[in-house]
Image 1 (cartoon, rainbow, N blue to C red):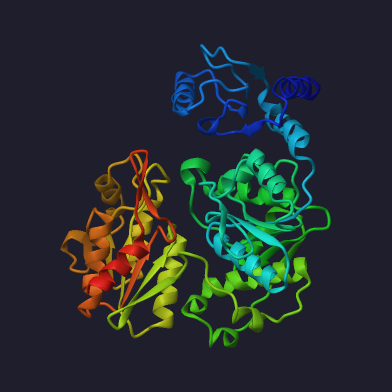
Image 2 (image 1 turned 135 degrees about the vertical axis):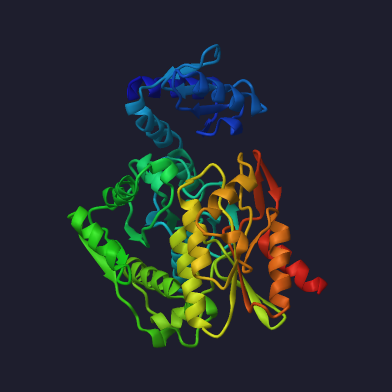
Length: 468
C-alpha cells in the first residue's frame, strides 16, 4: 500500500474513533483502538506464532492490523504493506500522531560497555544542568536515574522510540540511548538521526543472529549511516583494533577519545580501577564534551558520577567482597577478571558464570575457558536458561575446560541461588577473597520456560550476608 493510501486508512480510523490511535509493534500489548504493525511470512511456524501472540492479548478486536502478509483466517480490519515499505508505513503514522521529534539523540553501540557509557553521559549532562534521559538495558531513565518506562529490550522498535520522544517532549531535550546490533541491522532508527555516536568495543556475541563475526561487524558499522551530517562517531583510544577496523572499513570521519592517564583514577572507586571502565569513561567524557560544551574537568566529573546498576556492584563480605556484574560475553569476562587480578594482585578470585539459553551456543565453551583461565576458581551455573535445559547448557560450557571433573577448583551447581551461596561460603572461609558473580547484573529475574521468575543476584548476596 502506498503512503497516500495508508494516510487515508488512518484518517478514516481517526474519524471513526474520534481520537488518536494506540500504535504498537507488540501484538500482546494491543488494545481495541490499536493499529498493530506485525511482520510475518507464509510459513506455518510464522502464522502459528502470530496466532499464539494474538490469543495472548486481552483484546481480540484491534482497529487495524498492518502487515506484509495477511494471517490465515484473520477477519479483522487489515492493511497490506510490502516489506520494503514496512518502516515507511510506520513513519507515516508516527508523523501523523506524534509530529516531528524535537530532541537531540546520542547513540552508543558496542559489544560491551553500552549501558555504562550511556549512563555516564546522562550523569555528565545532569552535572551541566541539562534536561536529558537515557534509554537502554536499564529502561528509559529520567535525569535522576528513575525508571520512566521499562521496555524489556536494549533498543526499542522505531514506533516505540517515536512514541517515547513524543510523550516526553517536555521532560528531556537530549536522549542518549544504547543501539544494539539487532537494532542497526533491522533499521529501528529508520529516519531518526544521531547528533553524536560512540562505539565502545567489539568482540564475539550474538552469532546466533548474525552467524559470523564479519556480519556482526557490518551490522555494527551501520551506525555511521545514522549520524547526522554535522555529527561525529567517537571511538576509545584504548580500543586500537576497533579503531583500525572501523577506519579500514569506512571513510566516515571518526574522533578518538584520548586516554586520560592512570593518575586520574587513583582516588576513584573500585569501579574505575578497571581499565575497561576507564575506557568507557573516556568515551563518555569525549562525547559529552562535544555534545554539551562542558564547563567542568574530567577529574571533577569522575568524583561525582556513580556506576550504573549491576556494573561492578560491590558488597563487602567477611573481609572480602562480592562483585555483581552484567559481564556475559567472553571478552567481558576476560576483561573484568584481568582487571580484578591486576588491581588486587594479592587476592584470590572465584568466578560464578553461566550462559543464556536460546542464544549463541558457540560462545559457551569459550566463556567457560576464559573464566577458568583468568580466575583462581570457578563455579558453573545457570543464567537465563529460557527454553533450554540448564544442565545441557552447562555441559556445553564444560567442553572449554579439559578434565574439569578432576580439578578441585572447578565446581558445578545448576541452581543459581545455590551456586551463589556456595561461592559466598568459600569466600567466608577465606579460601577466596573476591567473588565475581557474572552475567545478570541489574536483572531482577530469571527467564525459564517463557516465564520471568523473581531473582536478583545482589539480593541473594545481601540476604546471605545478613544471615551470617
